[in-house]
Image 1 (tube, rainbow, N blue to C red):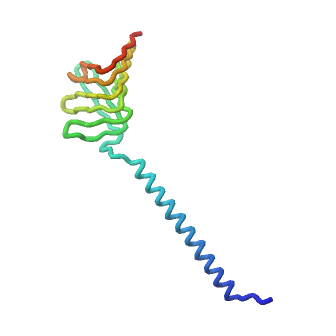
Image 2: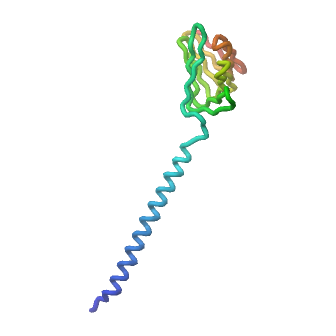
Length: 145
């Protein structure tokens, strides 16, 4: 029985080339998946994790969110996990338009206000007079403790 060395050599080269092509396509596919995942994670936000505050004579209200977009020079749309926190209360909602110049905030999304003895769930709110006044509107539920 004779072994054809040329046939074995050519077969080995073909198998090696197929192996290299498989590795190349796997690597290319993994790189494509990584780029696709990065694109899915990135958002259209102008600001990531914005932080602001409303300052008045007696109190300071800190505002945080997951992301924000500039609407114009002074107005910013804050989105996802928007929280207003002061020493006296906190408000949680999903979307708020915050005006940096006027120190006001408006929301038309479901909101939860919490203080020591009060909880208010509403369909939106307005904060004005530098945080001294808050108006809740829409269907609102008040729980007094």
